[in-house]
Structure formats: structure tokens, C-alpha cells
Image (cartoon, rainbow, N blue to C red; front, side):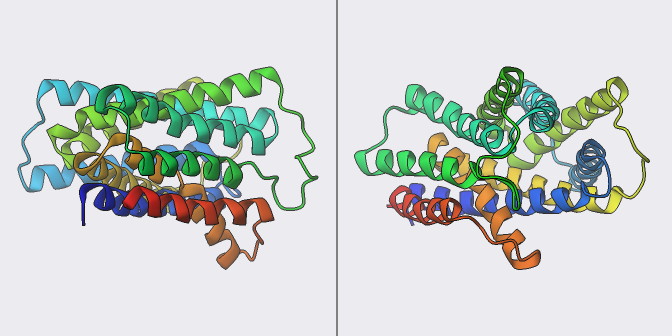
Length: 286
């Protein structure tokens, strides 16, 4: 298998892990504040990674990799808080679509400048994948009116765009830090991310009882960490744009899990997007 094919394959593993994390976290958010679920997942996964690093006596990454991993982990956690705020302010469909598109587009543009333009086949695959992301995410929740009843205000769209830019930047920062080692990079990122989430909770503590979130948070955090590890590996063996775009197809996995477990039928738009995503991955793997 060539580098592009391997990168796309590992990227799909990342998408599966991230999609599973979102599904588990979403289920848990029905019973407990979402920020508590995210924070508990970040903290537990950091402790687990730290224990593993100490057990095998993994050396610290170089200063360059360490700094970028810390920045990426911290700003990525803040981006998550911004994203949740955006979802609470306007139509979830357009908010998630804007965030998802920018998350994939930022590393794609960065890769064009650093790695050069992709070949025509890969360029078609990237374009198809970006359209697929929009189709998959730009859909109203089950039972909602055609385009979600709530309009998206300018502040909500601004926050959604900010979250997308920050998520995309995190993917770039983790790519830059990846030469320091996949596990070491992720451990540093989780340390900064866990600290950032604690600060967010101190500044804006969620309402409601602080209970019933640890189990879901740990499961979602482990899946999210696995997705990050797969992503880091994908960037090491292939182009950043391919890894980022394929990994960003994770909402399709969340939708499929909702269909299997909760019997929520995906919309025609989402089914079209998932079919287009499969074609995009085939083009990117060629």
C-alpha cells in the first residue's frame, strides 16, 4: 500500500474513533453537562498516557515538538468550549457544518503551502470530501423543521467559525509536533487540554448536578484519544491534507451509530454525503 493509501486507511480509523467518541459523549450529555464529560475524558486519558510513558520510560520530546503539542492541546480544548457555546446559540446544522468545513479546510490550505499542490486525482478526492463533510453535517436534528427552527445569529456563526479555525489549527500544530513521537505528543497535548478544561470549568461552571459523567467521559475520552493517535500516525506517513480531510469525516460514523443504536434514520442529504465520502476516500487512496 502506498503512503497515500496507508494515510487514508489510518485516517478512517481516526474518523471511526472520533465518531464513536462524539456518539458516546452525546449520549452522556443527555444526562450530564457536556463540559464535565469532556473534562473528565481529557483528565483520565492524560493520566493513562502519563502512566504508560512512565512505565516504558518514554523520553520527553524535543522542545520544538513539546511546545507545539502543548499549544495544540490547550487551544483545541478551548475550541471545544467555543463550539459547544455556538451550538447552544443557533441552528445546529449550519453551525456544525461551518465548523466541520473550516476544520478540514485550514490544514488543507496549510498543506498546499508546505507540501505543494496534490496530484489531480487527490485534488478531486479532497474537493469531494469537503463537499461530503458539508452534506453530512448540514442536516437538521431528527424531528426538527426542515432547516432547524432557530436562525443562526451572527455571534453564533462567528463562534462556529472561530471553533473551526481553532480545530483546524490544532490539526496543524499536532502535525508539526508529531516528529517528537505519537504517544509523547498526545500526552503533552492532553496535559495542556486537561488544564484548559479545568480553567474553563472554573470560569464558567456548568449548571446542574456534577454527577453521572465519569463513565461516559472516560469512554468518550479514550475514543477521542485513540482518534488523535491515529491522526498523528496518518500525518507521519502521508500528506497533512489527506489525513485531515479523511479524519474530518467522523460525523458519518456518529450518524451510523445513531442509526444502529437509536434507530435514528439519516436524512437523504446525509446518505448522499456518506456515499460521496466513500468515493473521496477511494480517490485519496489511489
